[in-house]
Length: 80
Image 1: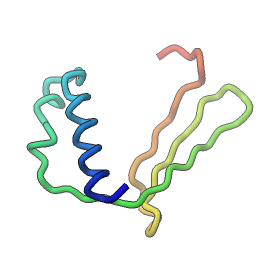
Image 2: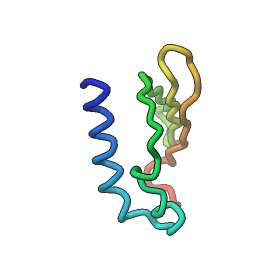
Image 3: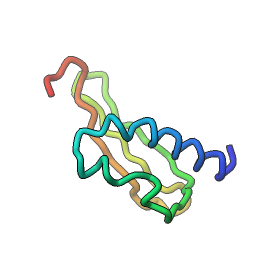
Image 4: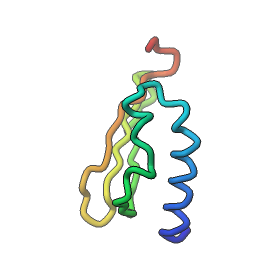
């Protein structure tokens, strides 16, 4: 996909998610109120094991290695 196509898709996804946001504060920050946009080439790295301990996902900018996001995904069946 081109950068324009990716940006269009991201906006489409965010507009679908907006009504599902739980916090009013988050719901009020719409994609239309955030005009500065940057498309980055990124890689997602998953750290897992055969044990049911969950996993960690790290998203990094491909060219620089700059951290974009990291999240922990609990093991299947874990209480939240």
